Image (cartoon, helix red, strand yellow):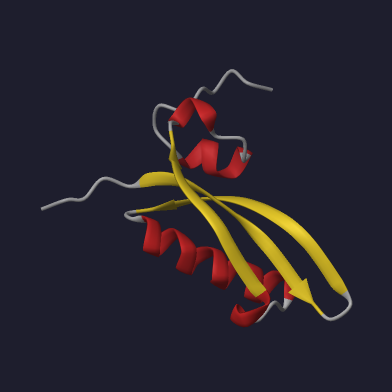
Length: 84
């Protein structure tokens, strides 16, 4: 059976010794746990953030029309293409 890929917005905080910031990331995944895992991987590879330095505060499924990330938008059927 095919599962439907959804878009999730994951929010939280990065706390490194010399760097603290909030983050919000949109990712495509089958379920919230997969979305969180993907965010760990993305932030880990891009920003060298270890898992214990990340605090996830919110994971929400969003509608295609609410996607802000242009790359995620292009990969999602039904997302509004006319937004510049």
